[in-house]
Length: 165
Image (cartoon, rainbow, N blue to C red; front, side, top):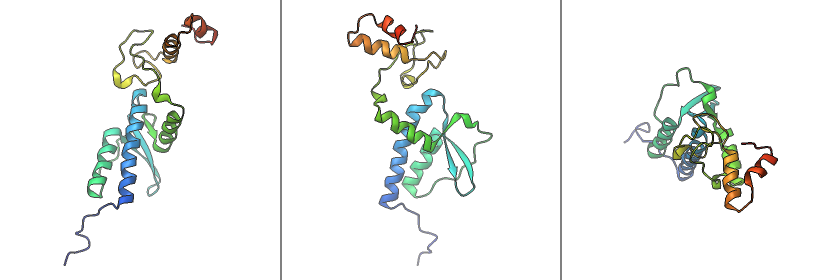
């Protein structure tokens, strides 16, 4: 007769679906926030009433282990984490959902900074600022879209809108 403590915990179908959704959400969060310099997410723990900080890869591995085994591996808490480098999970969810609602992921990539001319790596092109010099990339995105739609004298239009360059 097997001891009830010897049985491996398994997730039911509903729990598995929730973990798969968390993995998808985490991927969307990383795609959105890593380009802005965030190292991972923070999650408030109701048991200890403290914020826990997870680098992207660690949380992905924990969720994958939970999905496969029904348990998450024990890990040491982050040593002296810098809270500014972690985006709160609930904030990230709302922010990414809002971006999807307005079609942000359909936006034009900027492959090079218009100011410092640095070639922006593919994984950072959805960022709002040049990762090297901090220049906002909105003006360049607008310039490309307006030019692509045949708007004459795009630079004058952007200056009139308050976006000098």
